[in-house]
Structures are given as C-alpha cells and as structure tokens.
Length: 101
Image 1 (cartoon, rainbow, N blue to C red):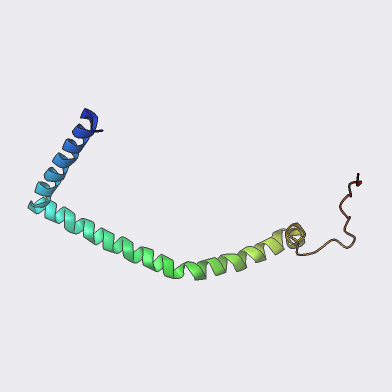
Image 2 (cartoon, rainbow, N blue to C red):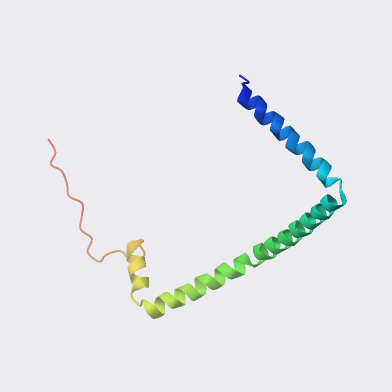
C-alpha cells in the first residue's frame, strides 16, 4: 500500500536525482566527477595490491606468531595440542557407565 510517506520519499529522491544530474552537467560537477573517478581508480589499485599481498602477509603472520608464542609462552604449543586433541592422555578415563534396568 502506498501512503503519503512513501510518495514523499519517492518525490524527494527523484528531485535529488534531477538536482545531481544538473550539477554534474556543470564544469564544477564534471571536475568533481573526474576527481571521484580518479580516487575510485586509485582505491581499486590499492585494494588489488593488498589482495595480492594478503597470502604473503598471513604466512608471515603465522610464522612470526608461532615463533613469538614459542619464545614468550613456551608451554603454549603443548597446551594447544592437548586442548585440540593433538596429544591424547596416556591413561584416558573411561566414561561412566549407567546401570542397565
């Protein structure tokens, strides 16, 4: 159902679109649009460069992070292995059995 609020929103949006179109037709608007395109191209290039470097960065982070853990927290590796099942306890305790009725 279209009510007055929706209609007003549509009209204001259309008016803003027309005003923007008219502004972009001016010399100042064309300069602003060219500047926006230039910044967008620069940002795209930076994003692509960062994406290309991401695997190298995460590999370095993994290596240096592991070295830091070993240096500053010597027991961390054993703790994580125990926590995530890398090392099973030597004498595991069997689960309690329930009596059969």
